[in-house]
Image (cartoon, rainbow, N blue to C red):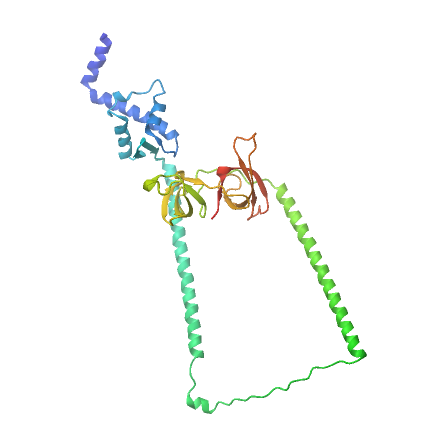
Length: 348
């Protein structure tokens, strides 16, 4: 060993805690930076570590306070820096976004959801009260109608029945009857002709209105292309990718009943009826057949309901797309092509 190496070892022995703490902190920052770039994705801890050590200036784990990668992963979970879980394939980690601005936005969204739920509950209670009052009023009226007559009242009660004379039908005979029948037939014919002309005119007017509306929408530019991280909406049919409960729900379909914090969904499974709560990264969109209803979950027409017209597989395109006909809103009847498969999902 050289003299400089001996000097470094002597300095380390004199203040080992300081150096160990410094290198441990450097290792932690570098590892978390790689993990943060993975955004919200759950990934193997060893994969993140392999990506981290590609940097030639990285800090070696043997110079930190953690003896193994497993102990470091457990440390990240205990400090709330990442969500961790152990499987047969090893440790998995997922970065927790602790940015104050984003946390404030999520908290605001949660408060808004609670306020909406409270408002819905109040509205539902008011409706139930109104129904109850109407029911009470109706039952009170029925009781008054069923009230029996007293014998004293029946003494003064007189019933008058008068037979109505049956009038014989008038029979027109001769020229007068023929004339009246001819005039009535002519009037009915004119009336039918007038109605036929009116219905044709209405059809032409409706066709002109449809053409005008189509021309206006075709000249109008499409909405702004809005892409957001969250794509979960109520009433979507989704496929579960999480292998929880011994893969009981894995690759099975369910319907989204509620959305929490924009990214979490309460899913009612179709086969068992069980309700489970999962993050959207453990769910997958379902693409229906032609003619079935869908919801556009991302892009220019995000939030619009539509109907699948065709599945397009252009060899020049990177991946298959769909053509959707919008069925509600100001773009009703508009045919939109080139929508990516992951941007649409089947509706229940």
